[in-house]
Image (cartoon, rainbow, N blue to C red; front, side):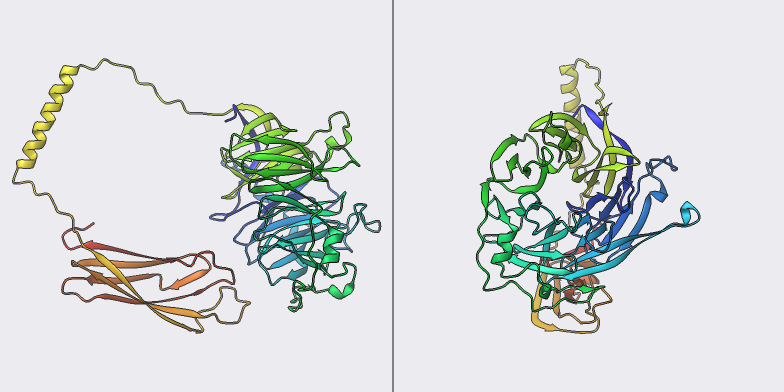
Length: 545
């Protein structure tokens, strides 16, 4: 644990009861102003844009109400956010939002007013790509530039989406240009783009860092990344051609190089130690940090004595021009709520934060460069900087030591044992016997599916009904019980109706409690757990508990 605490400059609790993970935080600018805005997306589908001002109107909180520029419900869980120039005709940045089966590009629109409170902010959908495979993550880059960049548009950025089954989808603006399945990829891993070598690096299922040339992927996929016939995107949310899929006749592609990590990778990022030099790849593992060259050679490796949660490489501007100190600078967040600022495997500083960060970003806010932005799993967003504030630890109160008289302690123990025996032999004291009722739940599965108007998706834009299964429940008890309540719990996106059933008196001479429950999918998502939990709560006749 660090002796110092990161000094909080601004903080905000994003939402209530929402969940966040790596990929839900991004910083960037949408105008020529160098100050960054903070974009946060939750798994509940709500996108928020913050512009921290640093002026705190409310003394109870560390933020201003006007710091929240935009809050919009996109209707689907947000997996990852990227900021870049994803529209060829626009000189400003856009926001790329990755959903479970869709990639959407939004324009950040700002309409100035007479006063500060008169400004209006909105997100306008520019284009989107629908996919028939569940997505996992994405990266951006100038794919197909051959490592030299696009001369016509040096700021153009394309998007590569990786699905859960290891298939890469590459989109150049409104066009889909390539679909390629990576070999031996049964579980997806972190992914990044190497601009100097025009390659894509990812971590395979066998814990190997593998690098693929984009040109080799395009040739092996059997597609021409410059052909307009591969255009499967539609403006303003229209569906793509469902016939497009991974080509069965595509050639097997081999990686340019691979490196054995021997452990699961939490993240992968690239940087340049010196401007116009080869790139460096940093891979964060569960117990180690690996630093590789762009041809797969190990530069250094750091072993951890802690559990890392996330990391960020931040030497993309200043250190590139400093040839006297060409080190790799990065920040590692841990599950012990500590930020380690390191350079080339050596820890330079450690600071304690208020929560476990799931993602870290370095931004320029209110002309303050190097502001550290952290996001927790529960939505605690903080902007902090390094300082020497000590960590406040509560020291337990030390009681004054007193000598114990052995004789008095034995005399007091004998007196207490005598009182206990007298109480047990007292006939006026009646010890209530706890009820030993045995309650059983019998489930009769009909194995029949039907569709009704009531079993629909929660989204109103989906008109089709979904199949439902009806299950009959019977509750029996060996003794008479009352106020019986049966509750049913299932995991999203499954739904049970009704989920609470009151059965009254059961057991003895009373009838058996019966119920009929219908199960169906409320959202168009892939279920991750098919278990249903039935819980019975009741009161016995002799006990009011």
